Length: 293
Image (tube, rainbow, N blue to C red; front, side):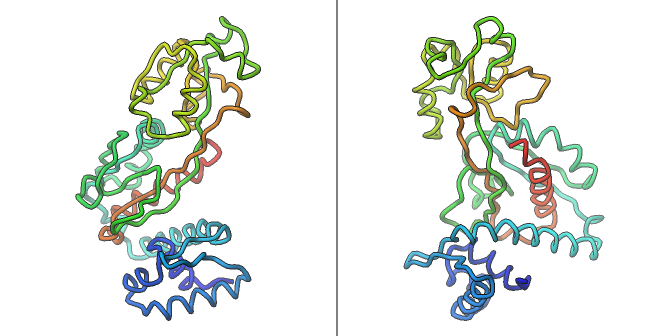
């Protein structure tokens, strides 16, 4: 059974990307750190890292261990807070920057749950598509679409999410069912403004599906509103779709984009109790509803 202290070192190496950087952060000789992680690999009977002159990357086994180690870390931190009685002392503000869909359709409807647990923490939500600079303190925590590769930032994969093609039930009743990609030809389509599409997969689907685009918007919420109104087909975040919208997912086996959300914060804020409270809340809520994504 892995020792928690070894898992703590493992998490540090994954987040720092090298033994040298991790050893500097932990005030531990990098050779000692490498030896401890090699012993962990031997005890588990598998290689956890691919090593190169540029640093280390977790293997498939390493990524699997990462999820378990992060959950253990969250529980250890929760125990520490509970025993120290810190939950009663948390106060102040935390600014959370997220992509529009995640902030609007997942975080905002659950803010009341966070407020019930932490009434003295003011959560500031910035659900925008633009990238924020955590080093300049434009936000305390960010939900990003990519793991940062520079700066003193810490990141953990939060969840994989899916984007699918949807239409309203009323629209399909009027225009007929869709059974193949060919059935989408010349159908009305709702999409992003072309020069504002920042995901290559969405750009490809936009070009291959949008035979007759009737509405474009930079806002995910605006696109969803148009699809719900029965205007046409649109690419929507699956976790944002609720039964009340009466939307139907079309060709799920043919049209799907899978991306990841990353929880990112600056290393200097890693020990902030109120930041940890927000990060733990987001992690818990996402993992308890993983099926939605």
